[in-house]
Image 1 (cartoon, rainbow, N blue to C red):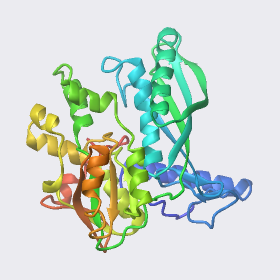
Image 2: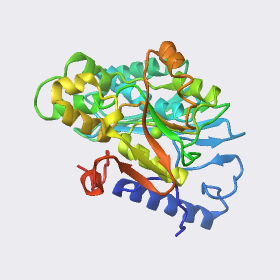
Image 3: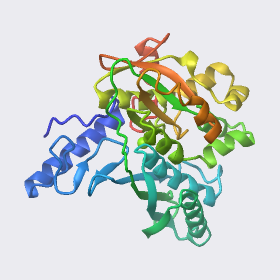
Image 4: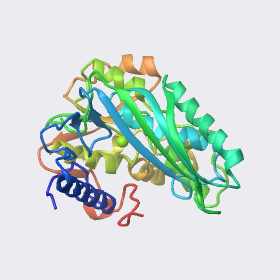
Length: 347
Ligand SMILES: [Mg+2]
């Protein structure tokens, strides 16, 4: 097995991904000399392999990424409409294009669905997918459709491709940099918590954060064009987990100050300030951006950014030498389990 460090943060889900990447690399090498290894010199056509928000192929400006949405894990049919399911699934994938500062070109939609629901759901999921792509001037490039056994969950896989003139990776942070995030955090997780705890439907603005997320494509490209950000990631796993990815990829330590977070005010109203803050730190799927930048670099553009996008830029921490993530006021035992994690050691 290879000992390559893929730049992912700690956790059982990422241990499993590391094991899968190592297994694929080893088997690929046995069969030939497939350049699947991000730590190798770029192979034929591969500028950046696994471990970032997207791979960079071709001349290094073509970004490719994929994202999976599983019924019962990522959404429930009682919560949102089929069209919203499609919109969310594609937006999650497009958010990884944003995280590379790439312009989406299009997406491939693969859907596995039972025979009973297919006639009504499949066209609606496709409509939502098309809407999410169209919002960013992307188009549907193709896909696949499969029947599942009766009563099996719906599975949607979205592969997106985009073009990045100035791709921004998760690596590149330097000690002394500051950590910034866009928008407010915790809204999507608050909606899920309200649904799963049997409190009925969340209020409209919270439901919207879950059902109709925004991929921050234009925002990321704006920051990249101005050379503001050094390292960039989108917030899909939750700020704590995604900051750990940034720290791991950059070979740095990140110190996060929860007092600086802009917590979703609707999450605070529904669940209280303390729980809303926990969800802002550990809840996933806000699809905001987190990035590091040199001291002073962002302050110069904060007002212009807010005016342009009607979206806040908030400094939430700093980069130091060292490794991993520390949260001001929280011991490691208290937050070790935080962060969306599909395979144990989570909530
Ligand atoms: Mg991502």
